[in-house]
Length: 237
Ligand code: HEM
Image (cartoon, rainbow, N blue to C red):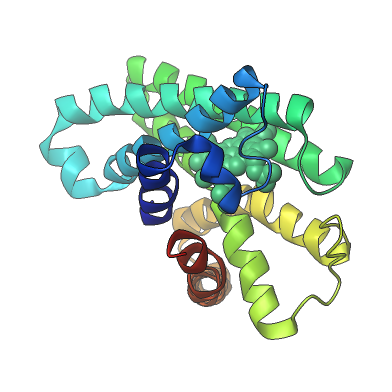
């Protein structure tokens, strides 16, 4: 969120949004107003969505401020759906790095966001809070897929360099596996965690806890690598 705020937000107010190409070379294209608006709304609304979404998953906020949770939840779902539709527009009309398989996986996560957003509101309105929690977690994981991708690929760069990555068009076996691990695996892992919570058998719960520990370590490494190698240098120029 700090990267988006101090990078995209600050640059837009001080130097204008055409300077956004310092963050991403598809961020601004001359004479493509609609595409630029789609990109701008995509990244700027993400700031509000990340903040609002994080408050939704905090039990202390959820339990003490129920009305806030209800209103904020609708805003977060609306933002996530809008951001996803803008993202799909960008992939189709502006294009991005990667191949069709990766574009389909990102679009799949956009679809999961739309469906989970709808279902999490529907189940809450029907007061089916067990199902609501399941759909809200799916929404949260799918909406964070783009972040998981960046953390995992930078963790890989930190350890293995560009092994398995075609740096010219950002394809290759590593990028495809990391795409799968970012957009599909977290959803499957959430089902596993839910199942292991249900049975509470050590034989299921222990490997599940170990897996979460490994994922946390990868994310932590990725966070250091992307902050030092990409976010910080592109903001502080
Ligand atoms: C709601 C979840 C999402 C969030 C929070 C999000 C956030 C972002 C952010 C912060 C960027 C700028 C990246 C940077 O400067 O490094 C970005 C770029 C982009 N996003 Fe998303 N995004 C989401 C979902 C999607 C979806 C579902 C799609 C497509 C189906 C998509 C397509 C794109 C594209 C094409 C770019 C341009 C950057 C590139 O070429 O890599 N996003 N997104």
